[in-house]
Amino acid sequence: MIVVNTVKRIYARGLGMQGKNTVLITREYGPKIRLGAVLTSAEIEPDDPFSGDLCGDCKRCIRTCPTKALKPREIAIKRCVVYALKGPELTDVYPDVRTLTEKFITRPTARSLIECTRCLDVCPIGRETHGRLPVHA
Image (tube, rainbow, N blue to C red; front, side, top):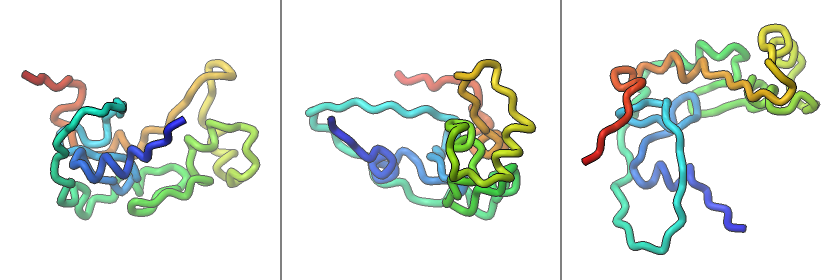
């Protein structure tokens, strides 16, 4: 099995930056992207590393987090709703987070995947392209 740290490679190759909500943010689409990887032996010229700070002084994602799991570019995973929802049997989730998830989030089925996207939803970056697919010639 080959394990590749794609996150570090993504930032180093200029695809975007780590936002204050800890996810990849691109200039065009903000945090509303999905990633995939292809392993190849082809010689590919890398882009320059991303420069700049797309977040600036914005802290919308931090303020909207229902469990206060976010600090700038840092996440307290045991306070994260997504972490709590992925493992109802996890014992290291803070009790107030567990109570909040049980009170406000109902799974349609026992195996349903529920994601908290509040920090993504409030991000103003990429709003003008939200819902449109890129067209490449």
